[in-house]
Length: 207
Image (cartoon, rainbow, N blue to C red; front, side, top):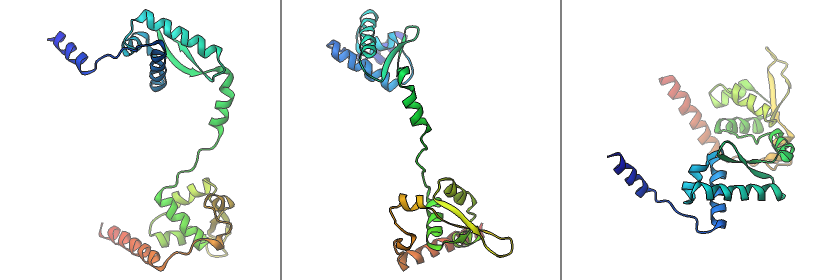
């Protein structure tokens, strides 16, 4: 029964033999790149349809090629397993990439909050929440963190609430030279937005 199952599995995934050294090397390169982690020699040999001795020789040849050529990657042998990794002399460049700030991803909530701030600035958090109908602390804090929104000061009113406005980074990211040149919102869009807020508030009241 066990032999039958093994036979069925081998029929489902037929081994394809690399017909040339070039094809074998290309296949191994693809395997190691896709795997990310180390791959055992036996698994590589089965994948390319060659015995382990031949596969080991091909891998050793590839390792010599990578090491000798002016390339940023190499193949590392780890106890009969192989892994594709970067060369040590290029670590500095990898660190430079890692230190670069990641591009901010704006959610629908943050975009909605940013739109209110852009068109109503200077505006307080309370005013933003009154328009949206929900708490906006997280969205405002994230926009400040992404340097799209900044504190402009405080109102001379009870509690001295902070007022917010957009930054130069906002203008650069959205391709606008001035907040005075923001696209005009159509009355239809405004009414749609009001309807959405009212509907959201009604759902909360019903709950």
